[in-house]
Image 1 (cartoon, rainbow, N blue to C red):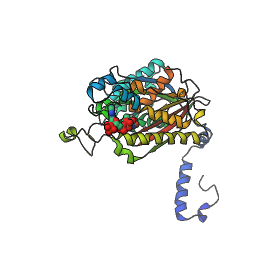
Image 2: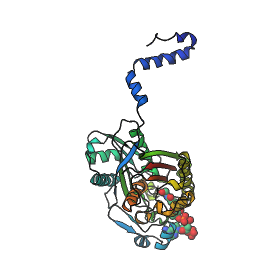
Image 3: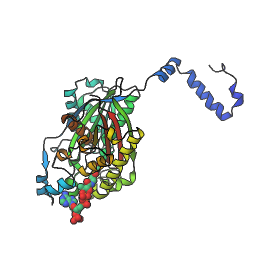
Image 4: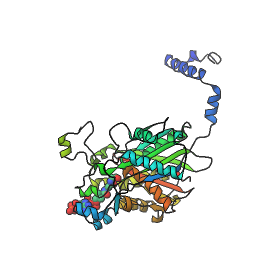
Length: 371
Ligand code: UT7
């Protein structure tokens, strides 16, 4: 190749010559047919081809909480919209819920787990600081040759994990990606803090991502943003490298969720609207084009305010916070399951998913449901 073209070198600066030499070397070492293949290959789209969720059997009702803190069922229902949430028994961790969710997925969509190329787990309540929950899940499921990692994005954990998995499928190299959202919020909830303990529950959901066949089904687009100034409003300060565990950090409950509810609420409403409007505009759509709106379940009022702003009737909005509370990275797949069970999500539906979480993290994903 080199030398076959016109003598370019005479017309280039020394820096350009070095750059050109590197380019020529790359071209020389690249098989031309694979270049052609790359440029002619149709872009791969990812689709969710199966779903499984798991909620631990123990239920913590508002009546139970009335006995634990100064609160009432009426206040919780009116201000947040939660009636009950599920809580793990001692010794049950995020990886256990994740594995149970994958087993549920397999019941509805049997396939050989050994084919899984990648496991991405969204969680902020990993079993431990390390190894990652993805490693623990891989081991518990006995998947022999795969890789994986965790994504920490608070309540946006599942959506961020999903969009990460999507990119791997879109690369054309990954055929089966397990994306899991799993959180055991009860492990870091202070059950004497009435503004926090009423909100959170435990739960997990898993989806299988695969390349979509021809057609319009699958994950279409996503937008996301982080704004670290929000860290001060929702955080768990203890146990990391800044405040390693000591008697003092435990006495000060630094290993529990700290939340400035009012500020999180204000941000969540503003950002949920902003992200959903951003993705709709980007795709030249309006709320009326959406068949099913699945938002993070943190407060019923945040979800309905966003739906109202988008001009979306409530029958298109999935709300299950009354039954499960806020399960952080679990909420989106669990809400997808609710939508399927209630017959409000079917193949071909245009679905809008939106989240806001600790960080702050936010995002929205547009997809066409594929099964
Ligand atoms: O997933 C992302 C993370 N989280 C969120 O998105 C949560 C966002 N924030 C919220 O959902 C709401 O801010 C809360 C549910 C946390 C609180 O509701 P609020 O309507 O914003 O209440 P508030 O913080 O403004 O408090 C109003 C009053 C206060 O009493 P005073 O000071 O007016 O006497 C609170 O002490 O309500 C009191 N209060 C409660 N009363 C009964 C707070 N929690 C409770 C409670 N029961 N559980």
